[in-house]
Length: 265
Image (cartoon, rainbow, N blue to C red; front, side, top):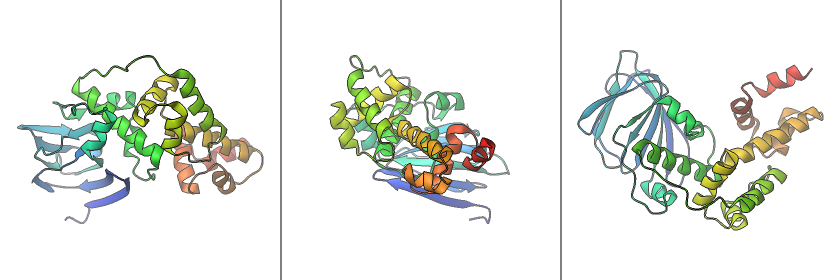
């Protein structure tokens, strides 16, 4: 391995592994996984042979490699490439699709604008822990990506259970610092976790996990404006630590908490 090559693993969960890597040359000989391998190129050009063709994945683009399909990997230029990858058990994807056959994605490279429209940013945030809500959000997002990229149509069956979804939203709003289990929210909504994840996004434009995070940030900002320190406010809002809060704050508002506090005057 060259001196500049590196691999960094992020927190995972049952059926999910995440990593970030940088390589030069041709680091990967032909191989295959028993999981989906879904990555996003961060810099450089990532080239790979897959299903009889050579593909190139540019910064911001995603590549989707199916389980048990042979592929390799190399840098498309002398500068090398870096990427983030999620490996996910196909059984989780099938659960999110209610047992339907796994969708086949003929073109493994997905454009950046399609990823943004599907709300995929959180999938590759490998520094965050994956709690129960985040795990469901991540699997549902990947299942949605696979269906979308395959060209399949997955219609939501029946109308939204809006009154029950509002109960879940109100629960998350009233106590954002509490990490409610998925089972609690399923019972409150009367829906299984996959239907809840899809219907909540359809009704409110975001996932239950992301909605909870924004309510945590609302609580944090109120606390800081009332005189609390960022560290105390982060604890009160239920963040695991101040760095976790800072990452979420910047992702939500585009600036660091410290800069926001300084601008309050």
